[in-house]
Image 1 (cartoon, helix red, strand yellow):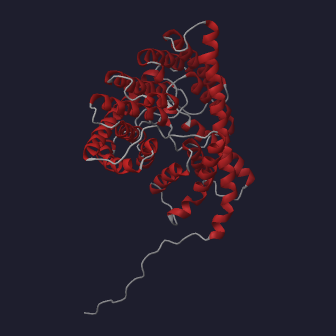
Image 2 (cartoon, rainbow, N blue to C red; image 1 turned 135 degrees about the vertical axis):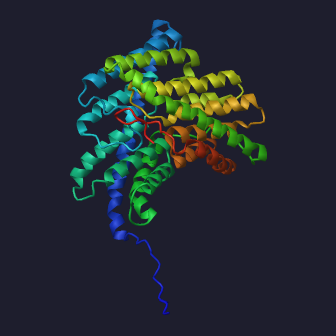
Image 3 (tube, one colour; image 1 turned 135 degrees about the horizontal axis):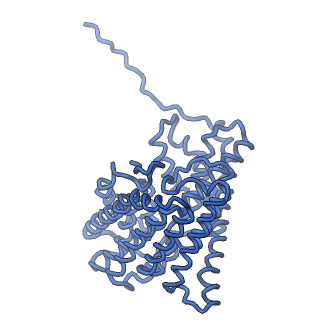
Length: 427
């Protein structure tokens, strides 16, 4: 019997020549800078309006800035204002936000002004959502529209990738987050070429966006929670708290289709959004003013004194923030879910520290954020990145890598915090 002794050459993924990658640098830098400027501009405008709504006006009226009556009034008024934008402005501020995620659809230009206005009003008014989803959608729409005209020969699919990467880089002040998100998206797609060849242009856009945001706004996620060398007790605490965060986050995920269905029965944005504002006002009365807004400034206040609240108070803030996120995402406010989920995970971690003094605040916070984000976003890399960057300590990363494994087993294969247009959950 004759055996074939010839061996086939190993299959090697071809790399992309430098002459193909070099022309992508200038468009990527342009998209990165413009995307970052739009994000910073919207957030700056929202902060100015927030100061008026929550400081200037109540001070002039002699009303407590965060009194129950004022929180309720502003949140309902925000629902009315956003409802008017969704009802009357051309494009109706884009699709139902409960049906969208970080991978934004390409929206026509007529939709973008209304979406920007609705986002700025939401950020200023206090609902528990962040800017990430709508700003990514606006930047994607602008990049496709402007890029297709400026460089008509460029592949159309490159512009959404550049805009998404640029916005994520600007949001977190580093291109690393964008690289992780894009690489996770590429793993779900059929792509050709080496990973770094595919990441070259998006990473360039993310670096430009992050550098622009850093020079203008200096965003920082690191909290003042020092952490040294981890021990076995820290590992146990990280695993338990991350699993608890994942389970609690999954409760909100499971509830989304039902809560969304309740608001959809109202049918009209001028009913849905004011009703959502009223519910958010009641939740704010229960959880306090720290459970308002996207949560980053409030997060810094929370961790400034980890022992300043009782375990019960931390637990209430965790549940209220998660409920506020669920209501805001269900009733039609335009916004993302990452930042309020970070606050909820932080409050959960500090609750664990208050219950068991042996749980280091840094371990509790990072593990709580990790578990919560795994459930809410279903993106492992971005969850691990955000949880690690909050503490900014090399010793915490190994703990989080181990803690992510059982937490991931709890969330994988289950519904995401996103629904289809017909109301069924996305898996």
